[in-house]
Each structure stands twice: as C-alpha cells, then as structure tokens.
Amino acid sequence: MMPLSGTFQIINWQESIEQQFNDGAKLSIALVQQTYSGDIIGNSTVRYQLYYNKSGDALFQGFETISYQYQQETAQLTIKHDGKFEQGTACSTFMVVDSHTYVLKSLSC
Image 1 (cartoon, helix red, strand yellow):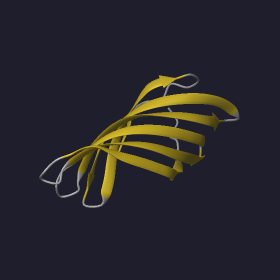
Image 2: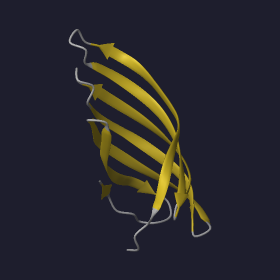
Image 3: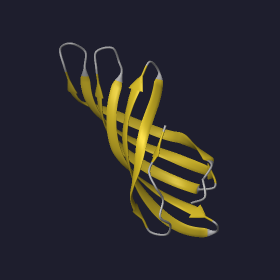
C-alpha cells in the first residue's frame, strides 16, 4: 500500500451543548466542515459527539464523509473517529468504514 500525504483545514465548526453538568462537565455535538489537499483533494463533513470534563479536556467520536479526488478519480470515503483533546492538543484514531474506490486502512496519531 502506498502511503498518502496531505493536510486538512477546518473551515467551519458549529458546536452546541446538549447537556451541562453542575461540576462544569458537558456533552455537546459539533458539525465540522474541512478541506483536504495533497494526495487526497476534497471536502468533508464530520459530526462529532463530545464529552468535556470540568478541566476542558474532551473525549470524542464521530463519522466523516470525504468527497475527494485521488489520481484524477472522484470518490467518497467514510471514516470513524475516536479521539481525545488534552492540554490543547487533539489526537484521533481513524478507521475506514466505507471506501467506494480504494481500500484504505486505519490511521492513528
């Protein structure tokens, strides 16, 4: 399998609190739009469910659908995110759940 290289940029993040707890923790949902450049060129939408603890660190899960071009072919890819946000840094493990063109494997940070 050939490694892929590229970058993504978050272009829109809309988050709403679903439940606020007395100790400052909360549950929220975020709808995020991103663009990709590099080996994969395209756009995506991610829907995250997030749990923030009282210190502001978070656990999150979500599904992302990427519409992209790879080697001049248009395709869609759906991946599952499972991650955390601690001390200002996000880290996520990705698992491909559907790929209409190429078989891609899981990625993690």
